[in-house]
Image 1 (cartoon, rainbow, N blue to C red):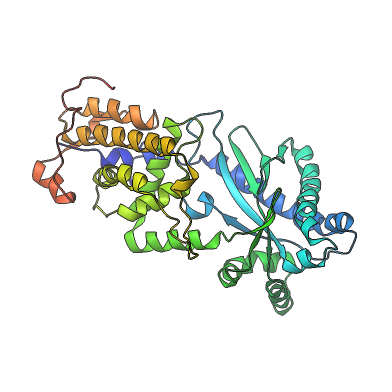
Image 2 (image 1 turned 90 degrees about the vertical axis):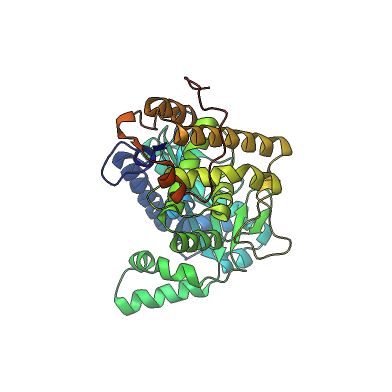
Length: 381
């Protein structure tokens, strides 16, 4: 029997799946630099531009909160270029009074989008980026063929801005600096029922990105970093198996967390435990883990039955291959099988695969492995 964990995650070797799906330092720096430029452009230009579109003074600078996989620390580099891209979601926030004071509040979301896109159009022209304005809930800036930044537009309670101004005065800081320093604390204080998201077709919708982040942070704190790694492995699997589409990241996070159990120093066993259960989890339906409304939002309801069955079947194949690898005595074949599922980012390094006894493997697992139909094959299927 084999132990493939060093090829999934290693604290000493650079060549492992987790390291190979990380953003490169250049990719990360480019996205962070672009994020700073976007924020500064909106802070500098949005109040006057909003006033022009609204026909009245708007003196408030926006605030920003990073959300999505970047904030969950589950972001991966793209597996297939094109069409895949790394994504940074950076929400822009204005006070709710902006919505209520516009003469026609139903037009406030349109004005918000138009003003943001006028400001960002100047920025994208300057840097040779592409401004994309057909997304229902955000404005997108494509900074390269490999990465983009999404800017969803929110309205939040006014008192948060008043608190920031007081903090700026007390600390003798600029407002922008106070915003930067206070975002983390203010984020947790926002009322859950008063966060609105601008929508190009539906004006404003109630949408708060905080609960899912808080839920996942709590899950990792409770169950350990191995949970975050398993989510990232399955996102890498998805990105190799589907050039476009596949199960959403939030669906994978919720499904994985519902069945994950820690396996000490055995990411391969922990992953197998999860993928053995995921097909039935998906077929049974997965609810949004941070939704407290009635009825609870279903994450699987976003897909057709045929799509869910496709997801389940591909995860079933991954389970077969991984189970066969762990039972195998051929490290070279195990690498071939894993690359058929994860692509070339899974290392072809059979010398680093350790042999283990059955008792050692069982001690790391929740249950004894069933026989795999792949055992005995000599090439990837």
